[in-house]
Image 1: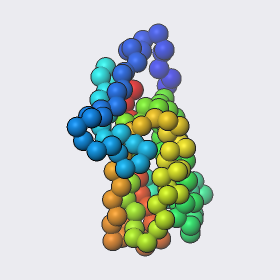
Image 2: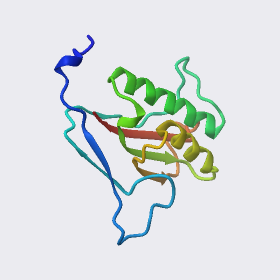
Image 3: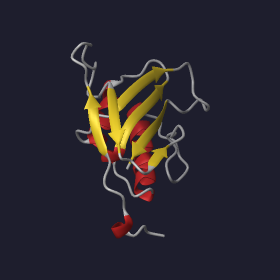
Image 4: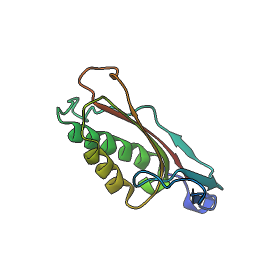
Length: 139
């Protein structure tokens, strides 16, 4: 059922929190985001690199692309966009070039500076998974 746009609450406000008394972020993200007026929140589980046809790509960057495709589908289903993402947590296994994953995230977020955490873990739930991402969106 599609929500009636005339009954929507005002759009939430998202503000980057960037104290000048601390070091700037190490990459293209915000230390923190303040959201006010949000009436809808989307919290994903860890999204894994399983494509819609059930396959898992071998390459690290291809796994990230599959995950972000899946996240965008969830956002769409929730009547949200990547601009509504306020927080990203990325889990990766050791030994991968992280620049490609950060570039894919930055491309999807298209200038939206979400709070972002990257954690290197020894392994994920299945050995073929090299990356897993969870997001929080507010709308």
